[in-house]
Structure formats: C-alpha cells, structure tokens
Image (cartoon, rainbow, N blue to C red; front, side, top):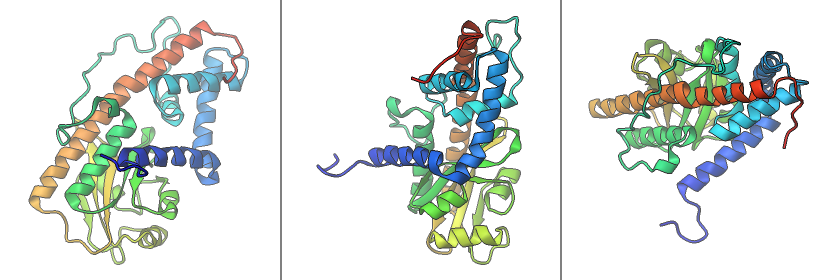
Amino acid sequence: MTEPGHRSADEEAERGELRRQRAEVCDPRARGRVHPLISQAQGIVRERYRLADADSAFVLLQRASQRFDVKIRTLADFLVSLPGPDPREPLWFPRRLRQPEPDLRFEPAHQPDTRNRGGVLGAVLSQTLSVVGTGMGNVQVSERAGRGLVLEKHTGLPPGFVEFFDHVGHAGTSCGPAARQVTQVTVRDVETDPVFTEPARAAILAAGSRACHSVPLTTASGLCVGMVSAHLDRTFDGPTRAQLKALDVVGADGGRWLAWHAGTVVLDALEHLHGVGRRMRGTRLRRQ
C-alpha cells in the first residue's frame, strides 16, 4: 500500500509520461522530428476525404488517437506508410483477421487496466531492470520504413539523455547491432567500446551509465520491432545464462504484443478514421 503523501510507481510513471508528452510539444528538437510526419499525414487525410482544410484532417487524427489510446505520431507513421483504402470499400482493411491479445509470460499478475501500449512497455522495462539488477533503462520502438528508433519509456535517466536519444538511427549506439543481429548485446564499458559515436558516448556517460545491455523486442517471425536497454553505473561482464534466458522471454513477449497492437488496435483506429472521413467528406471540422 502506498503511504499517504507518496505516489505509487504507476502514478509516477503516468506523471512522467504526461511530462514527456508536454515536453514533446515544447521541445524544438522533438517537434522538428514529429511535425513533418504529422503534416504529411494531415495532407493525405485532407486529400483522401476532400476535407476543407488541414485543421479538419488533424481533428480526424486526434479523435481516432483519443478513442483508441494511440499516439497521433503512431497513427501518422502507419498512415503514411500503408497503402490507402480502396475507394469502393467502406472498410480500409476488409479481409484482415483479428488475433487474440498475447499474454505476457513474465508478468502473470498483470492487471487488465494496464493492458495498453504504455503499460506494457512499462512492464517490459520494469522486468528487464529487475532481471539485470539496475534502476536505469529505456524502451525504444521502431518506426516504420526503417527510419530509426523512438524513445517511448525511460526511468532513472536525466533529461539530457532523454533528449539526445529521443530518436536515433541504426548506427552509433549499441541498439544498432542488437537490432541488426536480432540478439542481445552487452556493452561492458561505455568509455572504451567503439560502437558509440563520441556524442552518444558523452551523453551516456553524463547520465551516469558505465555499461548497458540491450534486448531486442521481436515478433514471432523474428522481426525486431523495438529495443529495451538496461544501464548500469559500473562496468558489466554481461548477464548470466539464466538472466539471458529470462530476457529472451521479455523480448519475445514484448515484441509479439507490439506486433499485435500494431495489427489490431492501430488498424482499428485507422479503420475508425476512414469511416468518419467517408461520412464527413467535404466538411470542415473544428477541435473541441
């Protein structure tokens, strides 16, 4: 039970996510990365449904985002990379098969009300840090079309680290080799490992991390869809065989859940957007 005057870990995580979302609006670096993607999506939606202006297109994205608890940038990422719907079809994905939500084997006591994307990524991070035995770490999710990794969850890391690694490519960090090889990667000593660019090395060391271990989040077909990394304040020889096995389970379960979410919840949101867009064709929508 949480003592009076103290916030639970879940409450702190929720507050942290709110701060992150607000920072994304205010931070020029994050806004500069996200804004072109959303603008492109707005243009597609406006043209596809013959809406009066770009603001109406944003309203459609915003309503679908809120209804299905999917970030606007996630909807935009999928919308610009997926083939458009058949204009003759009322459904965008008329022949898709719905799959059941996969279990998280590493967390048998998982509460139903936390089974959203943020909650699952938080559980993936928490379990990884528990296995490795550290309090610092982060989760990144792959953008579609191979553009890189987006930081989604973090704990124990300062704002400078979060800002620097908000979005990274596939080179210059330990996540790149882990994603390319689809295998766990240990950096025993950040200060000397050649995998890092010098700016990345400086940002990690400034955060108090001296070693890190990255675990790919993989689908059933072996595709890497994200990365969870544990950071330690000391050099690290790597996990034991038992720890590696436990982390394999975390990576597989987390990756399969992300794939399910992308193929079910995100597509539901896009299907909803398509249905509303068809009904509102040619009209002007305003933000509430």
